[in-house]
Image (cartoon, rainbow, N blue to C red; front, side, top):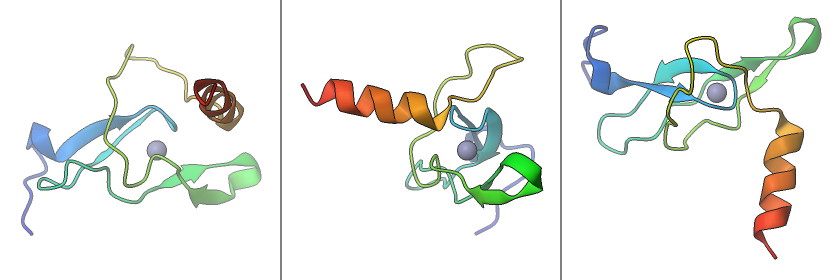
Length: 77
Ligand SMILES: [Zn+2]
């Protein structure tokens, strides 16, 4: 699959690591990507294969995993 680097449709904002990452043009899912953890350990970002979010600000902070879990538990009620 050829994707132009300058194609805006090929990129999306990942709210979980606060980076703009590559997006699959057909599925609109973010491609698998790593997230920088503590001590330079990289882990698969849990935004991988999810739909990209909207970047809230140019200098956005990543959503902590704890917040994701807390929101998921709350929405189960
Ligand atoms: Zn991510």
